[in-house]
Image (cartoon, rainbow, N blue to C red; front, side, top):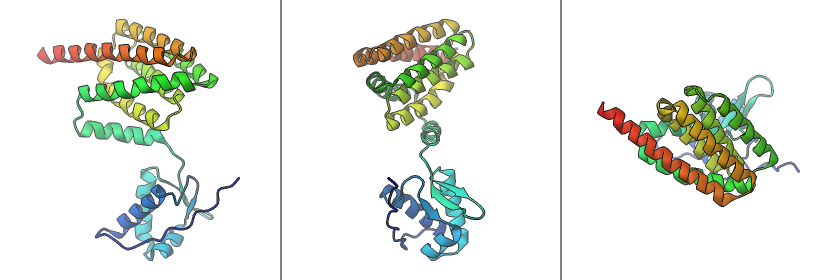
Length: 245
């Protein structure tokens, strides 16, 4: 059944801010307040300029920023205009990873967050994974196994497996958070990913896949918990040893 068009929000004058910033803020607030859903048509530049009572220039500036944030899709030409975009958690995940770096998030803090999120994700994946999810996990594991002996490529493949587990949890928020952590961990772990380490990672990934396939959420959480405890200890020890050289 098609969604009924939401009532158009009342665009208001407000804070001491530029016109473009006001337009951007109010569109985002209207989205958060439930006035819009993915795919809803906002209007052309002319439409929005009339609604806000401003010229087209600040509308264009605001829409450009909203497009960069992944909030709107913009089409040009006849019948063009701005629509509310479909969700893309990958945009949020990469931006969050960059912000974590910029604020100086420590390795210890990242590992704490990873433990909390990845253990929960593993349990949910064991409960919610579909046959298609299992196939994706099997393929991701096969790809990682084929890359043992490499470093960058294997680490990336291992992170792809972790993301596949997060996707199998069918919890969009946890999946996005996991992707953000993976963005950070990839660069941190790559220098320490020897062939011996890679073989151990494959073994633990296989154990996790077995637990998910068996619908054993407790076993899945236990595998990840033990894995991350070992990973944290080895990484921090290697980092500290390297710092003393």
